[in-house]
Every structure is written in C-alpha cells, then in structure tokens.
Length: 581
Image (cartoon, rainbow, N blue to C red; front, side, top):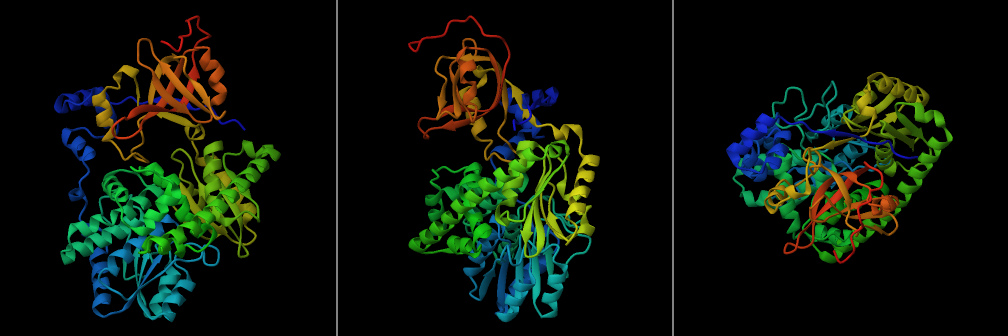
C-alpha cells in the first residue's frame, strides 16, 4: 500500500517578533525565525536554549510529596530496613532502577531490585512483586515508571507492613494508591512547573532532592545523567525545559561514560561517538528493551550495573541475541498485519485500525502498532492473547489522544494505562468485538480531518546560499534534537541535478543538486531510488529536508536528509553538466 501524500505546511512565525529578536541579539534572521517558532523571544531565552545549564533545573521540592519521600528513604537507611527498587520492564523502568541502585548503592548496602515479568505479571506493580518483597523482608518499595494506578497492590503492601514511594510520570486515575509518597507532576494538585519528565527523570528529581538535603557534590549527580538521557530518548518525551537540560548534559556524560555495562552495550550497537538522541533510540534502546520483550528484563539491569567488562559483554551478547529474535517477530507480525488489511478492504474505510491475532508475540505488538500507525496514518491498536486474556498496545497520530479513547472503553477493560500517543490495555473476556466497535465509534466522532492526513511541517523556505558557516555553527548549538525540538525542516525550490546523483544499493537516492549559481548540496532520500530517472532528466524539484553534519570534527560536511520531493516542471532543455564541471 502506498502511503498518503503529505500536506506541506510552511510555518508563518510573527515577523515583528523575529525582527525584535534579531535586532536585540544580532543572530542570523533564519535562526531567529526558528527560535520564535519555539516561543523563544528574547536574547535571554536564546542564551538558556543554546547553553543548557543544570543550575536552571527546578527545585525538586516543588514536586508534591518530595519531602515525605526523602524523609522515608532516609528513615529506611537509618533503621537499616531493606529497600526494594521496583521498575517497569521497558528502558525507562530499567534505567530508573539502575539509576537509583547506583546512587543508593554508594551509601547503603541493604538493597534489592525487582522487574516484573511482562507475560506472567503484566505492566506495573504486581501482587507477585509484593509477595517477593514480603518473602525478602522488605520494608520500603520505591516504584519507578509505574504505580500511579496500583491502588489494590499498594493497599496489599501496606496491609503487609510495607511502605511504597511511587515515582511515576503516567496519567493518574480518579483514585490514587495509598502510598507513603507519590511523585508524579501530572497529579492535578501538584504544582511542579514541568510536567513532561520521563519516569527516570522523576527518579532523578528524587535523587536531586536527596542530594540537596545531604549536601552531596553536584559531580555525583552529573555522573548519573548518562542513564537519564537514555530514558529521555527511549521514552520519546519532549526535549523541552528540564528534559533538554538533562539530555544535553546526559549526552556529554554518555559520550564519556566509564560504565562497563554501557560500554559493552555501545560496542554491541556499533555506534560511533559522538552519540545523539537518534543513536539512543535506534541503537541502544532496542537492545535494552529486548530483554523485557523476549527474556528477563532484569538482565538489562544487571548489564547496566555490571562492574566487570567481561561480565558486561556476556550480558550484552545475550541481549543482542534477544534483539535479533525480536526483529524477526517484529517483521513477521507487521507482514501478517498488512496481509489482514489487504484481505479486508473494509478496514481501509475505518478511522481506526484495530487488529487481533492470538499468536502474535506480546513483546512486539507496540512496535508493530507504531509502524502501522505511521504507515496508514490512523490510531492503531494491535491485540494478542496473554494468559487467557487479550492484551493490546496502542499508538496514535497527529495530536489525537488515543488514551482518552481507551479510557472511554473502561467498562470493557480489566486495566489500562499510558498517555496521549501510546497506551496499553487488557480486555475483559468476551468484550473484544465491543471494544473494537467502541474504539471505531470514538475515533470517528473525535478525529479531525487534518489529523487523518499526514503532514510535513516546514520551518522555513530557504535558498542554499543561506547556509553560511555562521548559520551552521548556531544550528549545531540547537541540538539535541528530538520531540519538542525537532530538526528544522527546510524547503528549497527549483533544485536540479548537478550530474552526480545516484542510487545507493538500489534502494536509496543519493542526491547531488544545486539551485541556480549555488554550490552543490548533497543529500540522501531514503527508499526513493525509483526517482533517480526523473532526477537525472534535470526536472526541477522542490525538496523538503533537514540538515545533518557528517564526517569528523576536522572535516564536517553538510548533508540534507530529504523528507519529501515534488517535481514541479516538465523536463528542461538545460544541458547536463559534465563531470569535469
């Protein structure tokens, strides 16, 4: 199935605001346009953006429950109580547990950790996890990246004399668990200024509060940021506010990490320094996640905490084998899902896409849902069987809140959780058909026409001559790029082949193009090799692209990553340049 043509939407920022910022800062007007689109309107805003500073992090004690949480942990240390660190089985939960274990382990030895089994226990705090705590004489559980809806489980823990501190970033339900303290800025009565932290980010704020209370050197906090940035990248949280500060310094720490576990993970991923957010998302995160998807997520924690290089490499080898198997299941499931859509044309008429097969592997349904949502541009839910229930993973599109759609189906569900763009659920026995029908009715009634059409947001229309060395230097300072701070996308019109464009592996298109009198700009259009014939005919093109620098620090080359191409005229009679030109 061919993907829908994208709608190009060129930003129209406030020109007066651009002019004011340019006059006050002296920055390139194009840079000022980008900053204004990020609502950065003053030189001070620009300075904070270009130079993220840990001193600009919010006071952690602004978060509701923080003082109680710090006091309870200190009490456990003073009383030599056993502390259990409990985390979810994905990257965010794994890094949260590893972060807290690293920090507390430097000053307290009576620690243990627990990651629930995705298949036997499911998401969040489980009764089996509480039973493990009881059997091991635990008196305090610190639950990370989960717990905000675990009312029954936390009640059970309290009945057994175990206190729970919850560090979560997911949306709360109407009733909160009876925990000793709940750290979640999404609570309606929490006045913490920034709401977009990852689960590991919440854990870091708890550590920051503990550090402030006990005058621990800031250098110790810096050494933990390699784990925080892995969670930020992997959980796809916005790279704004505190997340931008933590990611910026976290990348620096990751690029110089001495952790044997992370070094083994980096070796296994074949990444090259310096790393960026994309390297984490597509290089490190899949290997870490593979443990929870196909094996035991505790393996990933043991990898990160490993102090011996050989032990770390052994764990990394195991996880990479899991990742290879995960890729196989992922591909097979996606192909089967596409076959179902092809065989059932009525599915293409629906506003939502909900597919179920009992044999699909639970560990990959989220990945497949994400892929299908992007390909078909519909809110998508992929369902499979798990322990006599049907479980699912949902992904959404263009500002559509899939979590609300699922929440409206609550009478048909055993449990659910997540956020606007991604969620999971367990369906009650006999409710599958009703659930599918209800999701379609909800989506049909709430999704807007522009949310059903793939859209390419364009930052600015530019000429190649605007990419001066000064512009490139400032653009570099806008990193790290990711959600909330995407690579600027530029539109350049009337571009023609220079005579050097070619195919790469018969799949990708390697462009070498120019505007009139401009220098040659190189670029890559992934999966667009079939356009080479038209390109070589020198048919003028309008191209949308982001910019990246390739090569070492001494010889950096600017390259376009092409997002879309439109041919705008018939074949031109302009002479084709010879290679000598």
